[in-house]
Length: 119
Image 1 (tube, helix red, strand yellow):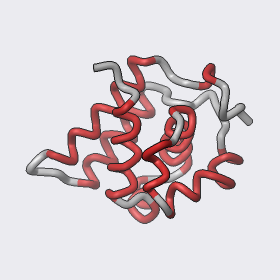
Image 2 (tube, one colour; image 1 turned 120 degrees about the vertical axis):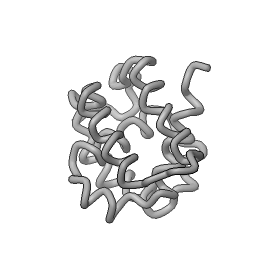
Image 3 (cartoon, rainbow, N blue to C red; image 1 turned 90 degrees about the vertical axis):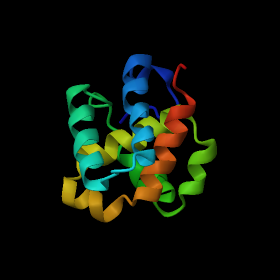
């Protein structure tokens, strides 16, 4: 299990920026949520986003709070955001993501990740 508060669990700034860029897709006129999830899942896999860290315990205890109340993302630390995204996309298939991760939740988490992006 990773220490969720340790900065050394974070991916590089370049990787964070790459994932945060997907936030803009919500504003696209031809927005397709399923396609967004497919692209994100592929990108997360390609970038090895959080694969070296096991945050399953944190996800079970705290991450579920974020699934039920996406307003919590507004002030979530970067380590929580990365752990949340990493665990969801490592653990769940596309079908499970469509069931558990509503567009509102994903938009909230990507908006917060975008706050940490270098502009």
